[in-house]
Amino acid sequence: MRVVRLRSTQISRRTRGRWWPPGGRCLRLLPLLCIFIIIAALGILAISEMSLVQRRVVSPVVGGGAASRIMPGRVQHPPQSSHSHQIQTSNTVFKIEPLLRRNAPSVELSAQVAINAVRASFIADIITREGNITWVKEQLTSKQTCQQQPDDCPKVPPKLYGAKNVSSSPLQLSESMLRTLVGPVEMGGKWSPPECSARHSIAIVIPYRDRWEQLLTLLYHLHPLLQRQQLKYRIFLVEQVGNDTFNKGVLMNAGFLTALKYNPAPGVIYHCFVFHDVDMIPEDDRNMYSCPQQPRHMSVAVNELDYKLPYRQLVGGVFAIKTEHFFKVNGYSNLYWGWGGEDDDMGYRVEHVLSAISRPPEWIARYTMIKHKKRKPLAWKVKVKLLRTSWRRYRLDGLNTVQYQLLELKDYPLYTRILIDVGHPPHNIRVLQQEQDEQSKKTD
Ligand code: UDP
Ligand code: MN
Image 1 (tube, rainbow, N blue to C red):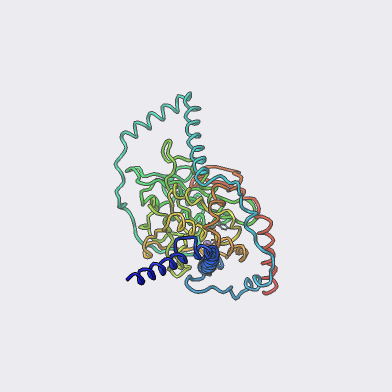
Image 2: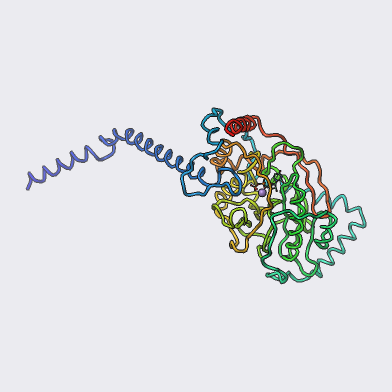
């Protein structure tokens, strides 16, 4: 018995000496173990990053616009066009870092600053007008009308048509003819239902340059539709001045920040925005332009895309979002010069920051895109890299860093015009763009 006990004690001591308590051989192996774990973690990270990059490049990147977009779910090879040639031969590397402002104010701070500025302008307005007796009278009467405000408009507007046929050619209209056709719209392109109190007030932002017929066609359809939906609204046309490369993202951000200064009711800012391409004509007035709980992609089914949604992150065309959500995603990226990408970047922002994009059913959210020439796409290299980094970059590129010059702000009968100078594309994007153009000329 004794022998047995001694042995067992010896064995247990030896065992303890090797493995326990810490300080034995195990401790000596610890640094090696740590190094092994770190290498393994880095390996896993690299693999997951590669697959992320692949996934991101797969879906909406290529071509940038409507019909040429490539479906997600398959591994994307460079397109068999001039672009692929360009990718293989061009050695210039596109660097994003120089385009980002490292000292940009935080997204939250810049949102607060923007809202404070709007509030301050309301207060300044009141202070300067207090001495103006007519204005005080107006306010008093408007207060009285406030007290006798009509009931809320019905949840389901009673005068909707449903689906109707729309032509993909622009209408031949003059502006004066249009004015008589769209009903009693106030200067600046605003309207609210006279018979009831609108449940939603919406700012519509249209990025624009040199598409007059398309604009008239859209206004011809949109004003009456919004009126049938009994919404309080104002249409803002954000126009880029000059002939240099178009930048839709900057126009959207500039339009948003400028429209914030307009108040649908005294001291109130617009709660929601609808960003609307000028060539997207709604086919069904049951597709509501109301305030969405989650950001809402409204142009789900477009004739150009065989009335099918090509990929999940698409928010291009017509996109409705609450003001607070637009601040949260830091607006659009300002770095997409030329055709395509800025909308997909917004899709990623929304998915990353707000989790989900909502959509009405395909059979209602139908649009006809007016036929037009395709624009020159943003250099492939630039677009791929921007989209790949979209959700990591969003805090340094958007509303908090947008730069533009406001050249004109004027009320026209059917819209408020915001004329903007967005500046010129940065040097490195220009160089890559030129390289791509030269390559496509050679291969054509
Ligand atoms: N746009 C414009 N003028 C231009 C280029 C673009 O007004 O020269 C605006 C317009 O609102 C248009 C939107 O930007 O609907 C998107 O551009 P485009 O229609 O060329 O792209 P798509 O969506 O057809 O790929
Ligand atoms: Mn278009």
